[in-house]
Image (cartoon, rainbow, N blue to C red; front, side, top):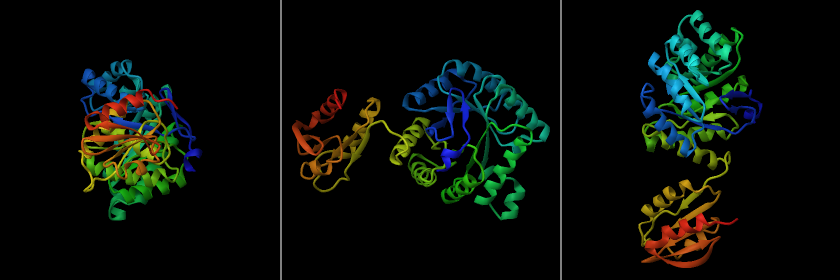
Length: 351
């Protein structure tokens, strides 16, 4: 497994690489200068399982805001810098736990060195971020477009620039909105470096399309043992990114914990609002700290049998439903009490 061989990097009070658990990241979409709004969003992200948070730093006011934001949150804070090396230095001085830069966008080597010197002074990791949209013009022209090989070449070159300055506290990310290209690039990169890799499909899209692209792409990459932190990039509330990331990791067997909800597709036998009920169950179990599988079935004919692999489940009928444990019917329940009975069972669950 590539991930077991990657360098260990400390980000705030967390560590990545070296076979440590894959951590889930997200990024705020508030104005970083608005401390109250940014902190409120980070608290919501923390509550659903975000483990590293990134904030954009486009202005000196945003950089200064990081100091106050850090005081009010409990997860590591990464400063995202695009072009201005002064913002990177200011973010480091403000207490950022990591910075994300593309050295090729920072400018001259002297500017990159100034950032590296500031990071070295405080031992702040640098994430070298390269994506298809910011690939060097000469590489794109040479390859007649963005390629997996070009992304890897750029990332390794930018990394080497920092290494030549005597600093190797680094994380690498290479992203593309092209799922297959992105997966191939990670396969190539994992063979050529032992730095921890932050993995994601950039500009993945809306909640619907972004989730599908991210699940496919991250699934292909992570299943090969590649990746030390992940982000599911979605156009919308970043809380949804965390929910999706947790489910992807759990589906791949890379994370335990949390209630998994499984439900059957609807058919002509369905006599209840199964779609609504399944969504209600998924929302209802979000705050219950158990490692269980819960089944939501649409009929009492096949429900018990189909729910055998689940720890507990409910199956709906006409006006009433069944409470099921390990495929065995425990009791009949009025339809309007199915949700409350299930929650009560989970809150008093004994292993």
